[in-house]
Amino acid sequence: MNQTSIKHLPSIFEKAASDTWKRLKASSQLEISQNETTITDIILLDLKIAQCPFLHVLKTPQHLEHLQGTDWEWWIGANNVGWLRYAVQAKKIDLSSQRYDELGHTVNGKLQLEILQSYSYANKALARYCFYNYVKSIKTSKHWHCNLPVDVTQLGCSIATLSTVLKAINTRGYRNFDSIHSHVSTLPFRCLVACPMILSVYAGARRFPTGFEDYAEAQLFESLPLNIQQSLETGYFQEWDSNFYSNEVPYRPARILVAELPYWSNQG
Image (cartoon, rainbow, N blue to C red):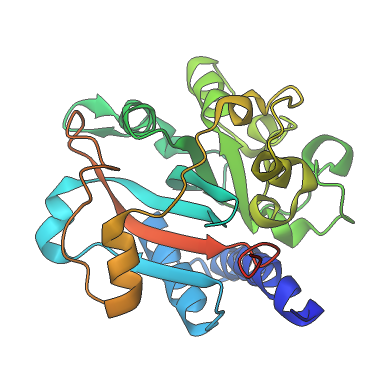
């Protein structure tokens, strides 16, 4: 496998983050509003257009939409090393206040965070928030936790743990860019497919630094759910695989991303 194909996957994640940052900057300048659904669907379309052989995106069919409870489900890995499963809720920054005012959003009287928490627990997924951001300036020593050179546009899509968001919700004055990005576990989107520390899960690592403790107990699935496998082969999404989607919680993801890590996907 050539180096271009190996680098292709992280570069697509980088482009999604950078484009989101620039798009929100333009939105701020032109005073054009974009909600989370619009941004998420644009990202989904861009990922599809990229035509990366290691990246696949699916959207839940309309007849199953009544079950939706999370914005995304991400499957990242390979059959040879296993798959990490992420349950993901997207939130957009308020461009004026730099706050995430919708973190306290409820669905049918239930806190959205609680839905994410119950879904991830029942289905052995890692719960994450994907924040869509643009801010005029950042404090790199405080807000940048990636070992790669600083590129502020990579915070256009940043990933935070459930525990970080739970603290933000329960602590007055913490529902903002500064507080959430002060946590070392809040990282650029690309880190999920490029960070050696995170990728060490696939090699059997079970000790992780503060902020990343949930990786120590993360479930590595041997294969993708049957319904996802069939959808990737046929392009038709029929039903949910009951072996992977618990009936104890009625929620299902609105969109599914499958990222095959090219480092291992072709190894025997």
